[in-house]
Length: 310
Image 1 (cartoon, one colour):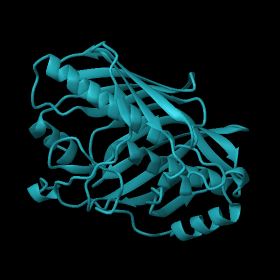
Image 2 (spheres, rainbow, N blue to C red):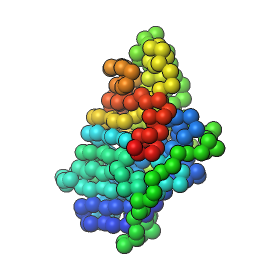
Image 3 (cartoon, rainbow, N blue to C red):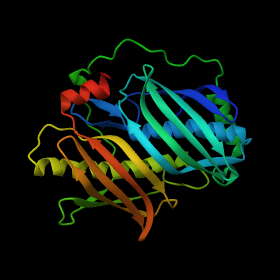
Image 4 (cartoon, one colour):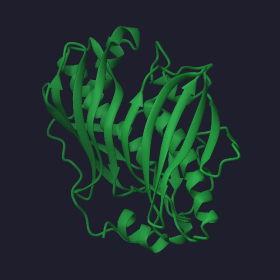
């Protein structure tokens, strides 16, 4: 599976903003379930779609000499999930430029409604020729950019998914959980291998694990920890859903051969919300961190908010 999250660029205002399309299909390799029988595209991975759209704005503005790499995300928020068959509108804009970085924000819209928003993404401007071929990047951009192409129109209100839409296969973002003896803390390891498909595009000349893959590793471990908290408190039927992430930081490049040690620690817990701190280290050095906020709706409430948008 290629690691390409933008299917088409419909509008581009040079050095300023862009709008595009991301289609969700059963062929996607990043489907997940937050409630049984309701497959959705990983909302964390949709952050990458916005990042890639903004990346093209920057690359085109700098005449294919730089490649943005996100090092800091001030906040991520999510209030809806996308299912196979959905067409999403992507929107991204540059807030400011610096000599070696750019500040950006963006959102994902479903039926005209924002479902994911990212703010104050710090994009370090890495020399493109050290990560990918400028000629290859130009060809990709030419294939993606269709000025004047129509963006997805708002359709009728979404309907509840059919029971047969359930699926079995789910991508695993961590390899092994490790008990700590502390019910509010959990560890996991993730081995990074050169066989991961994402390195075909991220990046051909210098394989770097995408930040969203690191975020998903933390999200997966945190969800497991939240499920344990629910069980400890005798709460049944709740679906832990990541609704917000703050101060997402990526401090080092993680590459094939590295082993990530992921730590999740509960900061607060109630019947409505759980807050989990994530730390990622590689060879004892801090690699990434974030603070994750989980809502705890039951299946019906999850359906109403995240699927039907009501």
